[in-house]
Image 1 (cartoon, helix red, strand yellow):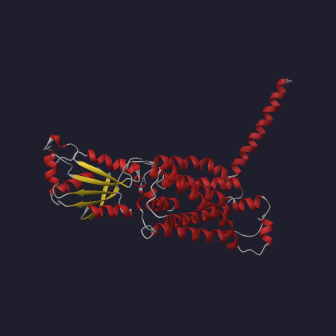
Image 2: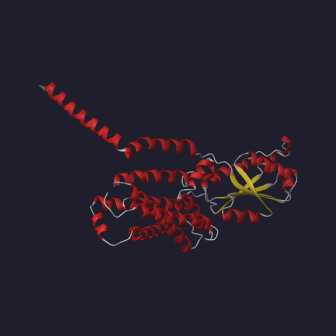
Image 3: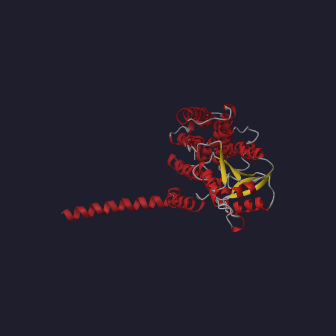
Amino acid sequence: MATNSLQASATRTLAVCKKEILHLIRDRLTFGMVVMIPLIQLVLFGYTINTDVRDVPAAVADSLENSFSRQLVQDLQASQVLDFRSIVHSPQELEQLIASGAVSAGLYIPPDAENRYYLGDRPYAQILIDGSDTVLAAAVTSLARFPFLPGGVIANKSQGLGLSTRLLYNPEKRAALFTVPGLLGVILTMTMIMFTSIAIVRERERGNMELLIATPIKNIELMVGKISPYIAIGMVQVSIILFLGVLLFQIPVAGKLVPIFIACLIFILANLTLGLIISTLARNQLAAMQMFIFVFLPSMLLSGFMFPFVAMPKIAQQLAEVLPLTHFLRVIRGIILRNQPLSVVWEDLAFLLLFALFFLIIATFRFRKRLE
């Protein structure tokens, strides 16, 4: 009797298991998540994510201009950490390039660099570094131990390391200065896309779509009405994060609040319209959350929030340029830490505006006030 009962129980359990397997196979989105999420994580972590910083955009101000200085530049270039792309004439110009975000490091070679090297009494050159990215700054700072030996001979064994470094915008090497502005973008990405990605789906699941169909509201009016409350929510989140960043982590806000809030507003709009697209594609809230993961995971890993952007392969950088978070991190870190005006970061802001407009139009055309 007991054996028959166990067999019957096993048969029922197996039947339920078969039914669930068939359901997973027929649900293409869930089946795709089973395959694609591990695949995406493997590719992103294993291929695109690289903590070995290479080809940091740099500039050089060579006041010596002889074989000694040229050899120094060539040897530093050969380290593959620095990639010298610009030539200027003074350390002030180097600082201006770093402040604008055009380069992340600069090499200043004084006119008496060769004499300093052979005397060994003081550093013969200086590397200026954008210290707002602590990982990048650590990699470039390591070049202070660079064994520059002209002709392969050490002229003065007591000369020491020879290269000095100067960290701009973060001389204390505090990780919070890099992390907190980035968290502002990550939190807005997570909340804004998540909120709107379930907005229309929730209306359908609750049966409220009939009420929308009965109203004379237009598609564009519905889309704008859906995202408007979340704009206010996003701005409240921005205020809270900035306040706590200054209060708890002593983040020095170099830029003015008006450019910061303008940049955040544009970024919020871009994320909300992206969430609307997901909302028009998903059939239910679970599907909307699954699609959200597809967007949020690459944004976290490729935008430069967790890993240096310059360390990623070119194909990963090109993919990251499509993501709003990549552009926002450049903007917000530039404004908060380097006091960049909006005129300097206008290209990234223009991309975010066009992104928001494009996806708002797409979401409007995709939505139909009808029951499917």
